[in-house]
Amino acid sequence: MKPYFIRIILQLLVWAAALSTYWNHMSTEYWRLLGAAAYFAVFFVLPLLAKKPRTTTGLLCALSTLAAGSLYPLTDEAFNPFLILIQCMVVWEMVQRLSLFSAIFPAVLQIAGLCLVAVRAGLQPFSWLFISIHAILLYSGAALYRLKHEREAFANTRYNTLMSEYRSLKRRLATEEDSARQEERMLIGHEIHDSVGHKLTALLMQIESLRLKDGNPYREEVDLLKQLAYDSLEETRRAVKAFRRGDTGGLQGIIRLIRKLESDSFLRIYFTVNHGAFSAPLHGEQSFAIYRSVQEALTNIMKHSKAREAKILFEAPGGSVFRFEISNPIINPYSYQEGFGLTSMRERLNKLNGDLEVFAASGQFVLRGWLQITDRGGAY
Image (cartoon, rainbow, N blue to C red; front, top):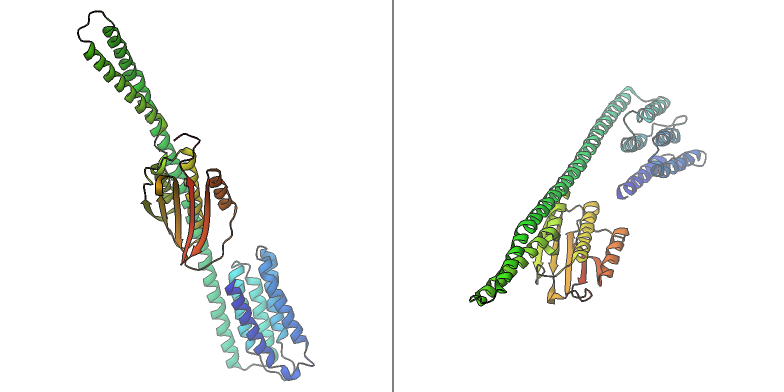
């Protein structure tokens, strides 16, 4: 919005200077004020119709016509040089809002209006030469600028498309890798369960039958072997459960998921882990809530922040509360409003006896959340 207001101020100053040359005749030439008022009315409407190219083209044609008509010299009046400055500002609007082909129509009207005003004012050959050189340089520079802008826009579109496809492919590869890893873990778990587990169970049965025989002089040794075989069977069962459960829980799993998100979004993320956060007994729902909160915070950074870095802090002071904090530097101060994402994060944490806090201070935008990790319905 700031560049738009700067352009309005420049337009007002130039038009004030242009109309001041007719101040002595303004009582009889009030139509110049009406033309200037119509010019600014069209200029204010222009941003509202930016998504309609044909309407924008018509409005810019109207600006060119109104500028030349409002400063058209009457009998014995000289050429108003501020018309050239006004046309330069109209050309700037054309370059910003129209394609190269669409800008031809208001440009032709500008040149025709300028020529009519120059003929009416009876300019000398030297002045005609100056206006011709000015017009050639102005429209050539505007055309080159527009061509460069369109090429950059096309390159950015291709880059964003390729980047989106790259991220999608990377996520798909990561998903397939996780799926293959999980299938391999399940296969290993089944192999351990079907081979080692069954053999240990058979060994326990043989040891028990040996222990029940009458007159066995090695009863204590047999009991020790039975206990050893039983412990081995329990360790095998725990290993099989660990294979089936996977490694996505706890802070380790959260950091692993965030690292994947970091590689997809090209953000620089700095981790700090304090006060026993690695040993915090987080269950699946808590881990998921923390990861989604961090993900939403990083998504907001990608959307709204020019700084491509973030700091993430995890801590569990006292072992009863797990805290996390995401901060990123603010280059230009801005006002923010909580949307659906932050509201959903807060509701998810509230269900887990936690809360969320968002604020900006000391050049940092901070998102801080916490949840209880001891209240799990007696599971701990």
